[in-house]
Image (tube, rainbow, N blue to C red; front, top):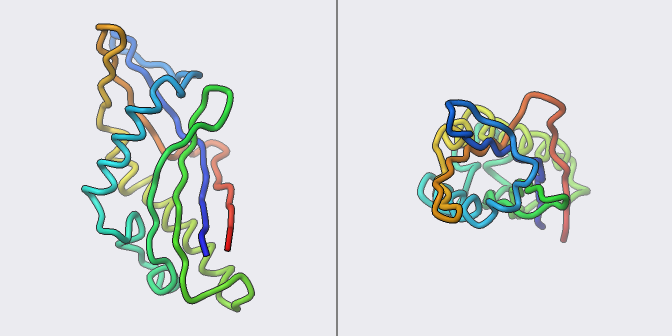
Length: 153
């Protein structure tokens, strides 16, 4: 089984005057963001991915990997997708809902206070027609933030 936890990302662009703004055209930075996320996840975690250090016994038992990526979301925006490979449990199992809630908590914790907190503090440098831009990407926001969940066999 595969569970995808999907959420918005936030891209801030340095304006060159010491300030920044949140862009409404994240798509223009897709290639650079996707490559940087892939490099960081593979460097920071084993093949288990972002749940390598999960506290939940259910997540440790049933989630074989949880790999973060970004993808286009429409309207020039991007979204995060944490693709989780699940083994040994199905949607009818008595522990499934608790495992799913624990998984969302673990990934949100990584986005807000763990891996994501470090990631959002590192600039991604963009060469934009000879001009260097500096962007910062956040995977979590305390305002109206939640996962959309997709489950497939």
